[in-house]
Image 1 (spheres, rainbow, N blue to C red):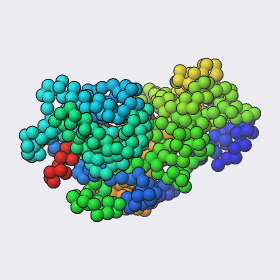
Image 2: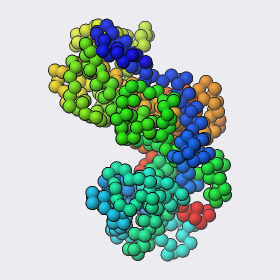
Image 3: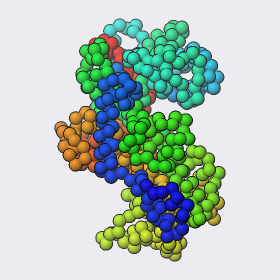
Image 4: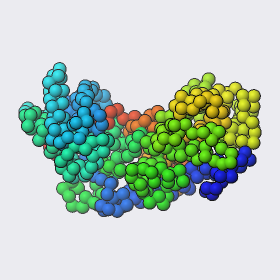
Length: 545
């Protein structure tokens, strides 16, 4: 790591080494990735063993003991509460890995968010009532094999995106409100009972049979459309994962009745809190600044390295340091716009637009990313362009103008300048081509590290479930066939090259054979369809099938 004083001794001939030193802090080679994944794996197993061990307060059984395979049929209800809207869904499972979805959103007012909990849950029941009344059929149905009594209540799965301590599939106690909610007299109470009491008061023939985490829903939804799934993962504003574990590997369940009811159980990892001590995560001063100023210092370390909520702020911290460099500012002539000066004024969406601007070219939007720092090669399609990219873009001792770079690179930098002007509030004359190159470089090193670290989480699950023995150079593939992984979130869906870089980490950690077997697919509506599938599984478990 370079001394902090290097930014205060900046001059043209020292700027490139300063940038190289910063990039080195974000770099992750095979040895570093293996070390991180090894610690991740150890913390997983500590968390499965005892409460209070490593991630043990967070790694939790979900009590879901089955995964769909796409042959399931029936119609189920889902209720999704997680933000400004409440969503009621009716999901018809067709039994051929497809489904139909009917849904309706209902606004959750500030008064409901901050009033009495009973009022909020009464509103949720009213919304379900309104939805069923407006339904063409007005009813949901169980598959014949499960519909033993014609008058059984309609099964409903609840996706509740707030921290809970789950003690059964249909029981969970609210730990705290987040996302602007602060409804009174809810903390410490069973969420399912609050909802069921509201249903019963209205004499609704509906029973909440499952409390669902969004990652569990992602896993179940992907399993239904793919015929199976081992991991549901969120890589978006936040991050988390749920995977299928053998009950015998969850000692914290001890002698509970759950152990006797099945071989497997979905486990909610809450991996965002991995390595809060930061003993193996590649921490930089820019990460430390973000953590120190956050609302939860020294917590959710892994999430702060890889989730969309934080990547823009890490990048902003880099850019501000470069603006403040003296006596020779490295960026924007030493000027900071209001957006750059504002905490979280640069978000991951802006980073994505910058990367898209770099990638948008005649070869098409899916063309391979050409990084700012490229190896020199005598055997390349555009040797002159590559040498100019490496030698000039970040070398402040050489001029960088339209006359010194070839048109292909010039157009890329001009597009990035346009994004900076439009999204960060700079005047066009304050953003040079060099500034565009430096901003894109900063975005790329932060996003690349995030994608590589995301690959560690997927590798941990593949290793934990026995698809691979060893890690890194010692990795040996076990078994055959595809390994389905369900994902959701803005980063994995929209950030250019995020999945490709994640797969780069997987090849280093579990080998190319396993990496090729891992089928990463977008889960279709995990909070809706996944909750309905969890309701199906709850009914199965209740009936012992």
